[in-house]
Image 1: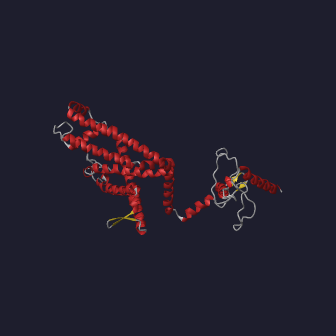
Image 2: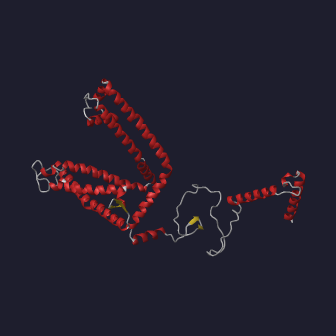
Length: 387
């Protein structure tokens, strides 16, 4: 029946809150204490005047986690269930784990507000699970990078709201919804978010003095500033798109390194043994390679290669032995070819600048006389090569 259902619901709420206050909150608090001690021991602190603050408190996740600790502590002090223990409910009945009593009603609204803040903090901390997917982590990093542009947009919007709200109030005509600066701010914000009623529009159209600043505000805020925000977000995204996957991998590596401290030596040893790094890996079927690697399989047509990328050399495997020269790649180095071309150019330039017996350059002589000896030299060189 309804009474038994409400009993089980109240019992479930009490158990969940007890788990949060006895398990979740202590783990968060001990984590901050441990990281704070490590930062202080390593002198990894940020000085603000004479105050030394651990550096980890300036990270976004640490700020959210610390805020959640404070919120949970306040919620524990204001919990209506604890204030209603042993007291009758609002209707006079003695109900177990109820929130409705005279003592609990005083804190119920404040407790609900802190519950909302705590729920948001839990969801923000849950975003850390994005490191398990590079694409999701890259998207989260992009969101963080464009927050500065959104902040500039909000700053400009607040400036426009204050400017036009104070200007409209200065008209001294007591327009409905614009009697004071707070009322004018609320009305302009409703117009910007398309949440205004028809009375605001009819009133603005009926008074030319009010209609002009409202139209200018709508054009400035909804047309100019919104499109400027879109252009800024597009530029920032295009600049960071090529690097966001690399940042996501770096963040995953940072999380892995930070988690290594909580892994015991025995568990780490079992993990290393499961990798079987001492066993040789196979490049192909029957082609045994070297140990110390992790083998992954892929379809044969995934990466087609026309030449064997593995260089094999026979002989001794001693470290003192000279590494054999690769006959296939001899003379294919681009730097060697450039050096040969530079040497050839230098020899030609020296030959052109060398003066002959008649006082001129070697290149200023007759073409037949200059070509004759060179041809004879070429023929003699060819004959020696053939011999």
